[in-house]
Image (cartoon, rainbow, N blue to C red; front, side, top):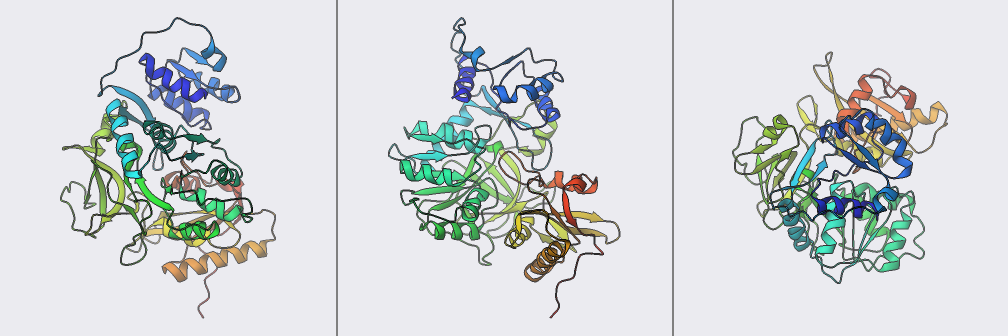
Length: 475
């Protein structure tokens, strides 16, 4: 409730709200305070100490407010009357490839996006939406907080720090929700941690959107099988720079794979959204033919006006004709269905072969004893190419070295067998080590830094080097 009345109160008085991830470091929060030229900060008690430390590094901030301050009597300001091209709010990117940047979204961006999202998702007043997504992220804010009210759809919100995914499923069961949304890892956690389905009934669901990270077919199959569902999870694709949505898979339509069976379509572009695939070469603007992989470019009424106080990065991604360079890789098939294959900057290049890290991570995550994994490529002067590094969070600590050694052997064996590449290094680490964005995406560039700088040292429970990684069996 505090978030809603603060956010919409700021809009009503003509201020520009900036939702923030509350567990950012003091330095990262101060950097955003300064970058956004913030003059006031609204927070709640248990974040106050960190906020005060950040404010000490942000000289423009004049006041820090908590709910009692906002509830006190004060002169009522005149309602602002913004134009549709006026700045509505700043949405700081989750920073999967670098420091967060302030995405400038206008009132027109937001209204146009929630309209075509509601249409693409088929949302009506008869639906019931349940969400645990944080409101400081575009998927939770635009997709769940802004869109349902447009269609008069009832909305139930859970705390984003949900420790037990069963609570999410229990609320869906209780209110007979027809619609929910989560990144892939949310559905994956349900499969891992909710073994007993007694008392759960998710058959009221008409759609469960999956986005913000790679949508794994294995997750869809496992979730729907575990909870007795069919054709419920709908892949989608979007990004903060486009306000949110670009493509949403239609409800109750069979999923569509590319001919290789590796990639799952995220659907066709939403109404009013155009997508083209362009060669990765710098300076190229020629669209590629169907089924050819390149960078995804988007043209949409939701495309941002730029990054706040960052004209250089703005010029890099906003191009003539209203096109946005997403930095994501993908292709469009002959029927116009979009497939997202990876992130341009995240691709691992091993001896000239492009290896999407998500392919390796899906293999490693299925190994018993692995909680979560991340794969990155790190340049090797000796090899003259990138070498594959795998960081795997283990489910439990304190196992004997022989057990960890066996786990590493299994990881190496499976990756080698299924992808044809042998990891140069495998690090088994404590839970929560892999750096992620506010939406759950792996911060691979940050992880590379941590490996190269030795910052993982205190988190490693078992590690190998290139010379000590056990070779997979040859027989």
